[in-house]
Length: 327
Image (spheres, rainbow, N blue to C red):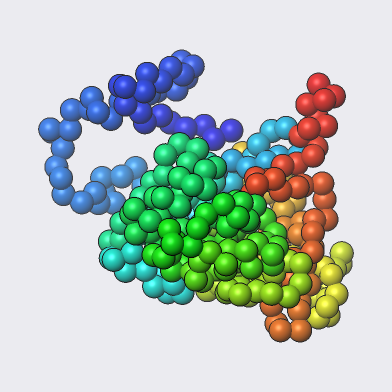
């Protein structure tokens, strides 16, 4: 459904695709006849705008057909600007990138260091599964910032020693509900600050945040409050706001919402709905997540309203498994 115009590769990859796709080998291109001056709008088929799609990432579908989420330039730029404004990386930082490029969380590692001149360290293939390897990379490279899914944070904390993690300053956690015990376990081996971020692929990586360093109470920690230019609503089945402490479905709005699902207008219309609390043309994304407002003014995650589950940070629709079994 993505319908790419071509696939970029190198001769060494030996990529072979069906005839309808052109494979462009970038290491064999003759670019000697092209200027190295910046590309202008007159050089393009059409001018670039903030609303143009920046990337498409495929995520779980309910019928066994993954859906492509198209996210705009302005959405991901807002995310990166907020990240830098909130966490202030500098040229002396070292970001450990260990998330697969098929997950939007990988964009933190690719874009944040590039934006501020920090150093990016890329883990080996499947290195994210090996706590000992990750700890040694953190120690050897002086890593200051990285990210984890909650499941891996727990495993990592229970398998490494504190002396290897002295350079760590900030750890971003995202992908599934974060147990307070995982935060406590990590606090035993590292003094780094732990930031719990929440956001589906349909909202440019993350859209709420909370500093949960030293969290000691409860089973699951807060997912916090909205980021820049973002709004969240906790609504009942009639799209009415629910009181503090009452469970409701979480709806997201603001600049970081995706454009929709590629070539799936029906699904886009079902999940991206009109926002009755915004201006003309304003949209909300219906997450399917059950949350409630806590007395502290932060969101508390409860569970799902449908049959989607998370496994090590990956979205899995149980309907896909059912569809495969029926087939």
